[in-house]
Amino acid sequence: MTGAKRYDVVVVGAGVFGAWTALALAQRGKRVALLEAYGPGHSRSSSGDESRIIRMGYGADEVYTRWSGRSLRLWKELLAARNETLFQETGVLWLAEAGNASLEATREVLTRSGVRFKELDRAALVRKYPQINFEGIASGIYEPESGVLLARRCVTAVVEIAQKMGVEYQLAQVIAPRGSGELSHVETSGGETFAASQFVFACGAWLGKMFPDVLAERIFPTRQEVFYFGVPAGDERFSPPALPTFLFKTDESYGVPNLESRGLKIALDRHGERVDPDTQSRVVTASELERIRKYVAYRFPALAEAPVVETRVCQYENTASGDFLVDLHPAMPNVWLVGGGSGHGFKHGPAMGEYVAGQLFRAKGEPRFSLASKLTVQSRTVF
Ligand SMILES: Cc1cc2nc3c(=O)[nH]c(=O)nc-3n(C[C@H](O)[C@H](O)[C@H](O)COP(=O)(O)OP(=O)(O)OC[C@H]3O[C@@H](n4cnc5c(N)ncnc54)[C@H](O)[C@@H]3O)c2cc1C
Image (cartoon, rainbow, N blue to C red):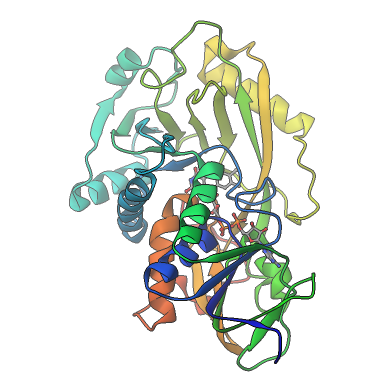
């Protein structure tokens, strides 16, 4: 083939998984091209919101606790040189009703893993966080060293650093490869050709569109609406350290305190309808707004009349169970499928990058991330 640029690895998609994969490969001395259709951390990507929670607790799913711990270290190391604070150590507070199995398992795994945390009974919660209505909540687990990554800007930072390490980043839409056998190159909609020995498709919710035969039924992109409520003027109760990042396991809700004065961020961790990431509406629905308003008034009574100051509509790129996907395409032996972040992937970008780079050069794989384990009927087990 003439005119093709040649690399060791072409990575398609500069969301958090693709960006960290490109960086990890460059750190191993590989010649890498990173191709992205819309721009790193763009508004339609799953990595594109202002903030993403990084927590260590994962119920009984210890592999993710390990990955979170490793990732937090790597995020901090990478971001240390930036003159902006892209990791905010807000602390993360888990809240649940009595006997909640996930909270029990989280407590066990955090203890076994040596993660610092504090248990709070209901009386302690009420004392410490008078701005919250703890009806139905029996106890909490507080992770003081966890917090929030300023997501969109984190992805941009990773891509910038990767470029400094030699990664060639280019804004380009890659045309879905077809056929079978080793892939020699990919083509872009602009007519350019990129040849490589290996290819990583870290295309988030677009994976099903890229590889419909294999993934259309195995990646479930769902609509997720996120709201930011303006806090009262001169009131610090909804900002850190007065309010940490929180997860109400009982209500399947989560939120981030008022960071950078953008308001209290809140959303439900329930899967919305199936959507197309290119075309789904990014305007929140009146019904969801109504539901979340009532919820905010219930849990944060002082915000009952608070204005909505921002909204986001994003998509999860779920696998059936919520486990990640990192495996070879079954018919293309040098094409890696990387994704399935399933509403909890962002924090794991660094560990994912290391893992994918290892897989390309034959490290032992985690069975939970295999394509064979990806079912076509959803039954979520990872939260
Ligand atoms: C509302 C919401 C809240 C979340 N909260 C959290 C949280 O608190 N903590 C957490 O850890 N995780 C969270 N997540 C999950 C996390 O954001 C995702 O799992 C993660 O961002 C997925 O990253 P990705 O790189 O796989 O996908 P994406 O960020 O979507 O990136 C994929 C990229 O591939 C590009 N691409 C696709 N097709 C092509 C093509 N043909 N050519 C070139 N480029 C292409 C896209 O443009 C896109 O930029 C949340 C997700 C949502 C939606």
